[in-house]
Image (cartoon, rainbow, N blue to C red; front, side):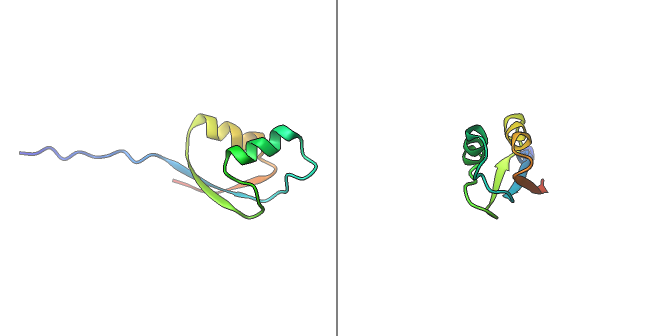
Length: 69
């Protein structure tokens, strides 16, 4: 008998950039680039890890969490 293995799916979070990085501190601009966002209304699906959550929190006024799975 073969054991059925369940592959644990990694949790993901989808974010959308809603604010412009113009006239923002350089560290916030670099955080957006690190999240894969650099233009308005772009969306990116990322793995839900503590480091990604920290980056989202650092620029929470510039991004919106669209979906969490």
